[in-house]
Amino acid sequence: MPLDEEIGPVKIYSPKKPDGVWQVSWTPPGMLRQVKQRKTKEKAVELAKEIKGQLKRGEIGRVHRITTQEAEWIRLCRILKDPQRVLEEAVRTRFF
Image (cartoon, rainbow, N blue to C red):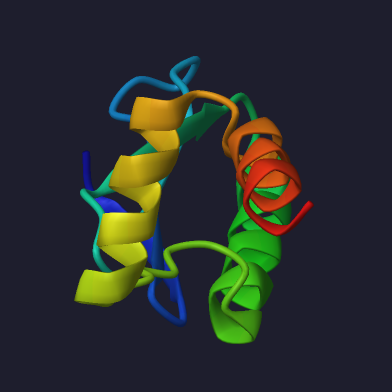
């Protein structure tokens, strides 16, 4: 598909056939390339502008790196299934 337009990091590709679909592609930070299809160029441009705004505001593609301590807490929570109940029980039996 030939590149038709670029709106910031978002690319719009025109269809090869007159009745084909327009493709909108972008690559959020830390993620694989994303592609969506729209029937008309107007809808493709509208989607591209919306995605550009979301990327600029950091709403999509955010990668959160956790610390070793956070990873340990997550692992313990998965093991315990209900960490709040276990914590309340430990406090009740230990301090009362």
